[in-house]
Length: 309
Length: 309
Image 1: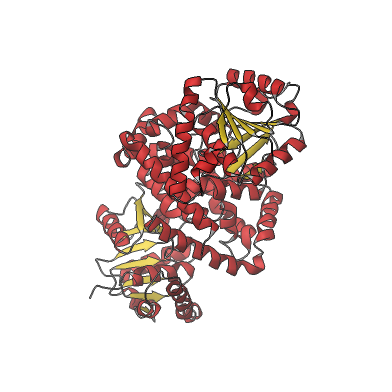
Image 2 (image 1 turned 60 degrees about the vertical axis):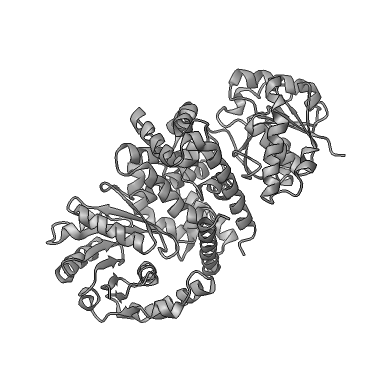
């Protein structure tokens, strides 16, 4: 029997990771420093698994749930594991203490991944006896619905660790990319926020409304991006491929590039106006319903991408 | 019988507009200053319409083709039209002369739209007797597959023109957004190129590969963006909506914002390397096949979005 995987932290991200690993056949041991959080873990997991079974995304909720157990202590969770996935709150001191402790306890062959999206791994996973086996394994929320994972080594992570975790991710159905070195926001949030910051500029300076921004995406850009990345889109947009696209639009891109305002800091009013526009169609009081709808839409798109027909 | 719509320019964009209008029941009159281009127009249109019929996106290719005619002159094309959609090459002098001529000939009630993506309308549609009825009507390519349209008035366009063209766009099934005033790249290309410029930075500085960028989109960001714009995604990512999302991530967004390099000018080598990466999976010699595959994927997504099940 393969060694289990430990999920440390039982919030939304930790539970979703547990589903990813258990769905692929791994035994999963979850631990949380807050025991009251742990009490809610299995009911929350079962609710999500039942939704997935109902949507036809998994065959048997109970079979997957049967592979997930709660651990009484951090040591119990990770002592025999092959990989530890940390998903605790984004506070540097907590992560630093936790990685030191996990590195002490974890078996020599175990790799230690952190789900952080906002803290460079080098701030808390270097200088340890086992820093070579530590790296950032940043998921998109929730990872059981969205396969991309960003692997980001520190300067002390060794190549074998990166390779092994990439292989594990592929084995459990995720799509890893590997960053060569650290950068704020890794790749996904940099791309996402470059677009969001320019969007806030257009709203803040009154060029268009928040609803217009979302329309540009759902009725425009994402019609291609759902199937092809931005580079592939360019490649198919010119008879001579990406080179022709970039050369042909070079001047226009240059003029836009010179006027982009991704450094734009939106005013309190602009953020409030954007919130109000979203709240008008998706009231905060009713968000769980829209979140469930979003998750069903993501599953439907996943089916489409696997079998475009 | 409703007056016809004139499509001036018979390239990829002009032909696609002809399909949009004819599909909605309008008679369409196409004209091109290059008569040899016009010779290829009907066969190319019929090929596209047959593909659409085969994919189940339209009921009858021949019925729609029957509404499209070639005009012998610019005057014939637009003399009795209610709207003129210009889609000629992106050269200022050509557009300037054409708009002056069209404004002379077009019926008083006709609106004149330009498909330009790269030239501000004010550079060629102001100072005319009828400049109040001229505006940019920027489609996403090809408009018969992608519904977003950006309407951008000049300082001389009147509000009634914007309203009438927006209503026409909705009537024919497009999704118009209205920009309050001119800006380089309008909204769509600004958002697209903000992301692309940061992507070229990440590739150029060796953080990740071109394939990684596209993976971030297709396996990550676009899983949500296909259904929800970037603002709606943020709104659903926090229990208190967009305000909570922006406040909660404010510091992280701020750190990324400070390091974004959307002003990055990629080297010749970086562009060539990106082209080579795309060419390795989608060889330029075989692009038409991948373009056809892209178009089928866009149609399949459109069906999904209309009926998420």
